[in-house]
Length: 159
Length: 193
Image 1: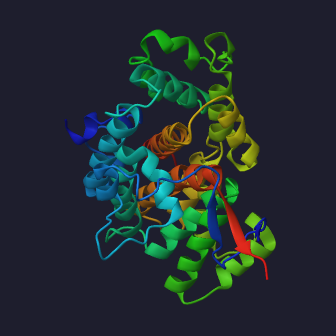
Image 2: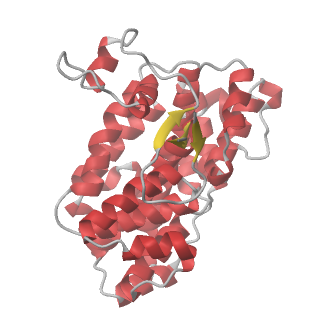
């Protein structure tokens, strides 16, 4: 895969030529590691209870909460039966994952307000500590991925 | 006993996990490998032991973190730290803000910038170049991002190059990631006298 075919550069609309592309080429190692991180977080070998399609749906949901539609479409393509959860209006209750959805939305959009009770709510819902860490990692990676895209897009078009 | 640290500080607190970390006795081979545990090095922080629950993510994030914050060329290390501090103030990650304010002060051999930020808040008086960097970091860290063309124009007006802007984007984004681990999975604490 070429640098410019990676998720973040293609979602930001950065193509060869121009100053944003030239800057990206100086950090090709970082974009390569970013692609590897997407594989590790979205498509790990050990998924715990969070299957690859469910992770993709949650990723698309977080992208939508941030208004990053190109990234949302990228992740939606892998969401399979969980696609409905990518809609921020779906609270997950009908699929028995209301606690997970509430946690993911808060961590993504109201990070500063997260408190210990948000963790105990997941534990009370029967979610193991290792699986809470997996949810936080997925959410945290998306925060990175979508901000790299937002920043690159501004470099391409702004000012 | 310890108390939770609620205000921004450059004195790095301890970090107390809200979940039970992996124990070395129960760690898998892959976890021990990621933790770099050897017979002569069995000291691993609670932070790393907590993240070892998701060892595949832990293994890819560390080299990415080091490249974004320390690779040569582009934006200075201190200015990348300023981006990290901006993200951490938006997300109210006391722990990350402290670690990276301390690092900023060491790199600059000066505590003035971080003294001002923690005393006066995000609107503290900064040099025009630091102001442009910090404002962009704050805006990009919101959900959704509030960064726009005016922020990029302000950076360029202060002579921040495209490569430097990219490094700033990367450091701010990286702390969107780090804050959602440190602020979510644990508390910044200080032992009580």
